[in-house]
Amino acid sequence: MDNPPTNLEQDLATRFPTAYTILFLLIIFVAALTWMIPAGQYDRAMNEDVGREVAVPGTYQTVDPNPQGFMEVMLAPTAGFYDPDSYVANAIDVALFVLFLGGFLGVMNATGAIDTGIRSAMRHLKGHEVWMIPILMTLFAIGGTTYGMAEETLAFYAILIPVMMAAGYDAVTGVAIILVGAGIGVLGSTINPFATVIAANAAQIPFTDGIVVRFILLIGGLLICSAYVMRYAIRVKADPSRSVVSRQWDAHRRLFLGKHENEVDDSTLTRTQIVALLIFAATFVVMIWGVSSQGWWMARMGALFFGAAIVIGFIARLGEKKLTGSFVDGARDLLGVALVVGLARGIVVIMDQGMIADTILHSAETSLGGLPELAFINLMFWIEIGMSFFVPSSSGLAVLSMPILAPLADFANVGRDLVVTAFQSANGLVNLINPTFAVVVGGLAIGRVSYDRWIAFIWPLLLILTIFISVVISAAALI
Image 1 (cartoon, rainbow, N blue to C red):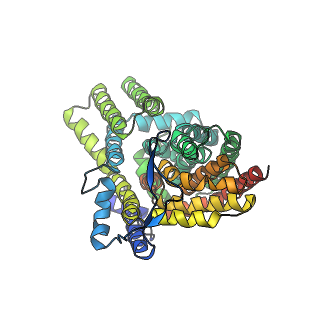
Image 2: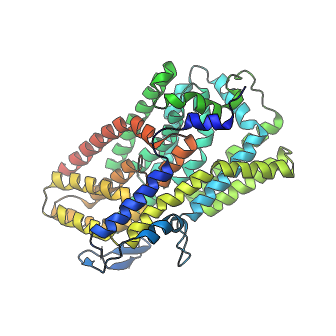
Image 3: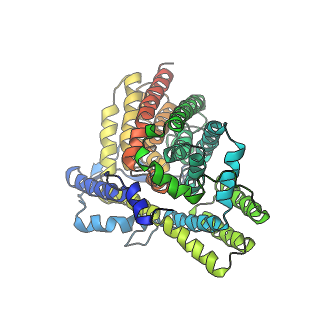
């Protein structure tokens, strides 16, 4: 007999604050910084190669302060979705995409095809499940390195986590495959237009410069991360008490596997379910095609999932009431994730309105002057790490920092391409844990993994990756 929902929620709860509390406290913290850090700005000029305005080196000047008070803090969650004065969109598109995705998954779950498909996959993969980890991480890394796969990964958590749990692993394993897999791809971006290409254009160099070093980071980082996640998964399967979410083990299994946990042999798909799964898979293929080659973003991806939900509902003969009810229930399940997206963007809004981002950048500019090669590139890496916490967007940070910091490499006898590499490595590393990055808090929310448990899992990997990156960029600076 299943436990009532209230007991399930109690079992999933931890003493660590929720993502909502953490993000709101960060909004307050950044607002406090606007009272302490002097306001300043660089002049901006349109850069045709980048396609937007970029900061002009040597033009920094202090401006009248605009400290963020109580009202701005209260407006920040709304401003994270859209500007309440100009009505310009911020993260509202991502939040709506999450809701459409939830509705799509709700309709798909109503067909029973996912549950049955998971049981069928586990029956066929018996004894070889661990090799799914490097294969899937490689696929996500390819998405990360080629087109900066990030928000799109939110669509995969609800699918992959039940598969991993049915294989005997935990929810963290499923989260890590997606978040770390795509993240290491972004960290080792090769042709990613939202990181490497924009940063290289802002640094006024061809984006192919330094691509060999980035391939080293990509391949080496992927090997490190795959081995780390596989080792963890094998330990957890052998002894569930070694899971970082062992206290939520039973609750996670009830949530993601439900009453079908032990029904692996009952895995015969009907023809309708097979067709539904084919449409389900085709939807994700079309999404990746649209994003990577057609310039699609959240609105079109949301429309794709909305349309696919309707098609699946008709094919499965759910009926009007069950179709709409399943869609709304699915959207409701991801409502918390949509709210987290707005809160995370609200932090960036507060910092921009307080005009402290350029001041922080100017301090970095003055700190790097006159340093030798090794000290320069490593300090550049750590400066970009610090800035990434406040500007999680790879394209946003590239446009903000590269026009100012890249020219400093000329005085340190370091190639500008290595500055671009240090930037994207730092940004990719931080965005594996960044609480201001909607992909992190959103993925953890879907997986019901608290932020402290994620840190407990990933901190050794972060240390290993930091050493690996420092060694690679240091060697490149000296060659």
